[in-house]
View 1: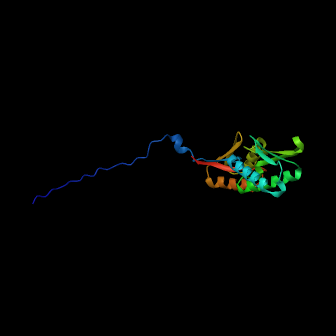
View 2: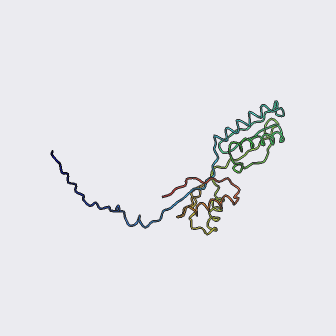
View 3: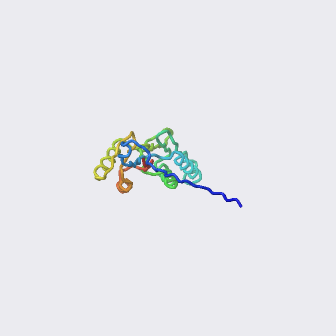
Length: 191
């Protein structure tokens, strides 16, 4: 019988920390999110199509030329008289709410006479946060005395800070305060 002897040798293995520059080790982790105000145009188009379909089927709009048109930055509502315009607007608002489009994102103009004895109303669609509202939001965040930084980047407000819980508190405070605009909180990042 032959016996084989195996000899195992164990070498000590050193575990070392990866070498990084001192500048990166000293930095604290930054978290951030963006405050935006955008309307989903696809949902807006779907709500308009549903509105027009219902208007064409309703008895009180029989033979009416009532219409809703989505332009680049606005909706244009037209009807024979203000009552039909108001009724069509009610239908449109119901459809928008069902599709998740916030009504705060709409700014109604005044009703004006139009061609052919009709009336029209232009409804501006808010895309982006207006400059005065961005300043108001930044001031509100700074007045909260939270350890975060808020900066205006065109029509977006970016809020950054070290603590995630502080950022969540800021979001809750912003939701509780009414700025008169629709706001979404997006682009949450941890660096």
